[in-house]
Image (cartoon, rainbow, N blue to C red; front, top):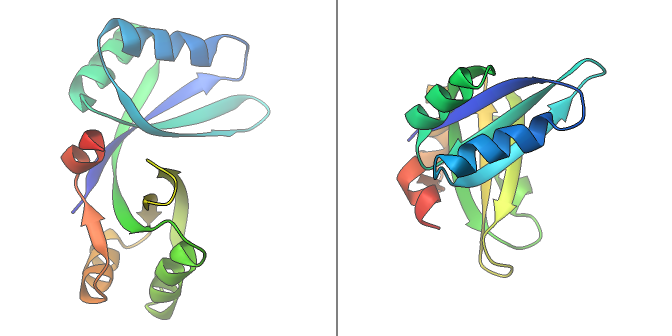
Amino acid sequence: MRVEQIAVFLENKSGRLAEITRVLAENNINIRALSVADTADFGILRLIVDKVDLAKDVLRKGGFTVGKTNVVAVEVPDRTGGLASVLEVVTEAEINVEYMYAFVNKSGSDAVLIFRFEEMDKAIDVLQEKGFTLLTGAQICSL
């Protein structure tokens, strides 16, 4: 249950994020989730989109450095302790979280937690054994 995510490396200067979103919009690519992390010199934009390969191609043609990685999407109830319940399970299994971000489609419904784990297969197995719902990329795009 892995989800493909693209990562775009961008210079930390005005307009670069707008340029990326313009390129995606012009190519009818829908962003379903995103996260931006930055340093003084550059940023990393992580995206889950509905057309991963097309997004990679058009962004590369636009001069951006783009990579593709796999993440795990965990659906939890949008309530206090949802994230804590997932982190408790992976902590007990001694699985390191490299990074994560989250989104809520509709308040009061479910939240989707996007994780990059150090040991992806182990994390998937442990989360499924504990009864967590893992989503596919198609399921995220249909939300």
